[in-house]
Length: 219
Image (cartoon, rainbow, N blue to C red):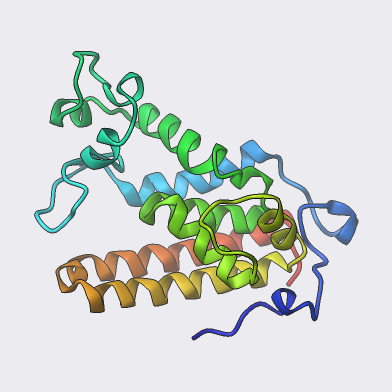
């Protein structure tokens, strides 16, 4: 298994976290909207447009919104075309703006990603969209050595804020790559997606470095 961030064992605390006072003068605190827009631009790039692969359990997908996901929503939200049911036509009716609104509500707002350190939030959001909020939350909690229940709450947010966010984001991405490889080992049909998953994770790593430089977040 991977080592854990130093903060998870109580050895170090961050200079660059949610609170700018930890690194006054060197750390520009972006607002939540700026962080979300940066994270979503990356997600939108990798989710693409129309997708329908026989080995994808989500079924037909448009801008990252799958039929399986829509069917898991209440009718008022999943019935995109307003005809009283949720089916393939609703997926085809999804626009970029629709996908953005759905993703923000389910993968950013509800799991409180906007309350995480910015770089951690970017990594969390991308993985949550790709693998689900509970999976992303459990990964983060496992790295932090807090109770692993798949629900982001006060303890998870507090411990995430105590870490050096660049270090924590790096561990999140490494753990994500490990999880993808483990998934393929368990479900060989998913091997068709492994290269894309790993490329997406590498691109997220590059994005984290660019954002850290833009926002002055120290190593």
